[in-house]
Every structure is written in C-alpha cells, then in structure tokens.
Length: 200
Image 1 (spheres, helix red, strand yellow):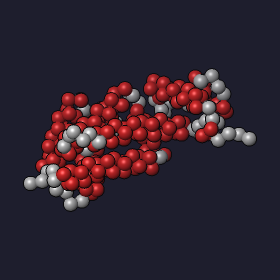
Image 2 (tube, helix red, strand yellow):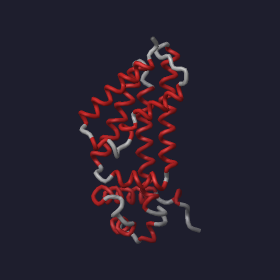
Image 3 (cartoon, rainbow, N blue to C red):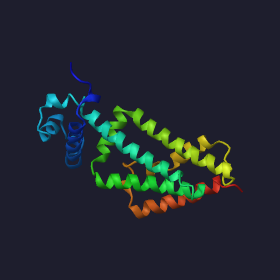
Image 4 (cartoon, rainbow, N blue to C red):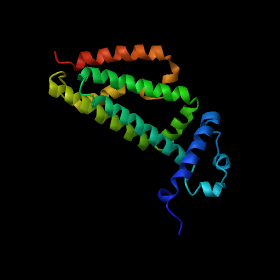
C-alpha cells in the first residue's frame, strides 16, 4: 500500500523544498522543472511525485509556511499589552512592510511564484487576507474597548485598512520603491488612518 503524502518521511520533503527554493531563487519558478528538482535531490522524477503533485504544489507548501510566519508575527504585534492601539496599528503596518520588502529583496524571482499562486490557488491568498482582517479587527475592537478608538464597524474598517495598505502587503509591489520611500508612505498613511480612528 502506497503511503499518503502526509505520512512520507519529513526529512525528504524538506530536502525537496530546499532544492526547489534554490532553483526558484536562481532560475525562477517558471524556468524550474520537476525533473531538475528531482535531479538536485538525487532521486527520480517518479519518486518526487510521491511527495508533491506538481511544481505548484511545492510552491503552495512554501507559501503556506511564509504566510503562517507573517501572520504569527502580526499576531504578536497586537498581543503587546504595553502599547496603545494606535502604536499597535503603526507597528502592524510597518511589520507588514518590512516582512514583504525583505521577502522581495531576498528572492528576485518571487513575483513569478506569487503570480502562479494567485492563478492556481487564489483561495490561499484570500484566506491569508481574511486572517489579516481578523487580526486588525481585534486590534480595532480593543481600541474601542479602551476608549482610544471610536469605530462603528471594526471589521469593515479593518478591511478598508487592508485595502489602503495593499502596497505594503504585496511583495510584487514593494520592489517598485526604495525602503526609505515605503517608510515615508507608511508613516503618512498611518497618520491619516489614525485621524479617522481616534476618539475625538
């Protein structure tokens, strides 16, 4: 009986993912083939398909790990009880900016994989964005509860903030500007958002 992909040796899966990362980094997602990844892992292509259905499946696994890391770091931002809601919102926006700028800087061909994910697994992108909205909603609601914010619809406002900060959320957009320019944009946008959120 052939084991399911979930029960195959984890160390081999990690070896495949590492080989794929190196290939994607140097040659890009589009120019990398499953046969090349298999060769780098010193295994047959047939054996590689026991672990991953296709190249997109590998990219999805990598992406899920990256998105989970970002969501975890953003959750830590709003769990900091020593800061005000305004400070947490500022930290949330800048943490998002720095995370995606770092990813795009370290991975020149990242846009290829992002485009492939958007075309093949848009549900992952939507799930990630919904999780960010939940984090922001919690932040805004906490600001309401403390009397710092006066927001009638925290969830709707959270969605609007995510839309307004989209430039910092997409690693395909951050390379279009210098880090200094992005920081200035983030600071200006944060100031504008807080003017609408803070209790008068």
